[in-house]
Amino acid sequence: MADETPKDSKRERSESDLSEAPSAAPDMERGPSDAAAAGGIEPAVPALSGKEERARRDHLARSQRGPRTAEDRDAERRELRSKKAVARRRRREQEKVKRASAGEKKTGTPPAPPKDTTPQMRTGTVVSAKPDKTITVRIDVARRHQRYEKIVRSTTKLHAHDETNDARQGDVVRVSESRPLSRNKRWKLEEVLERAK
Image (cartoon, rainbow, N blue to C red):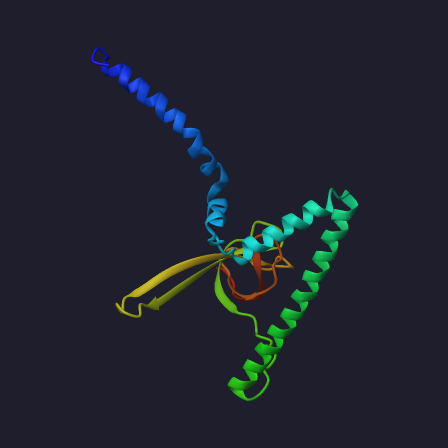
């Protein structure tokens, strides 16, 4: 042993470690639960969350059920959708009743139906009457700024419906709000206030 090199001694040690290893390996293969059972100690099973528990149950049910046909899956899907629709309708009815009762509590009377509002009116100058049954009206607004008291002027152009092609360029007209008549037209001509000179 005196003439052995350090490499040989390491080799012998590693071989001896390997000879002892198989006795330790079965403990590792058994796992912590077997080792605990051998010692008489119950292993601590981690509690699953609700989502994990449902997923585990669904997985077990699927594995026991076996493969399903497309018709079975479709029928199951339709049944689930109809259940959800019933639940949705019930919830919406409850919310509607809750909102109505909340409105009565605030005012003491049921909420009134919305009033018919009169359409907005604008007065402006016709800047273009070239298209058929359409005029472009420029509306000039001058108002005092709330904080700085300066007069602020702004201009808006809008398209209005002129059924009889009555208005001409330069006329002062009154237009009223209407339903959408085309892509840009939301107003209609009410009357010509002043003719262009």
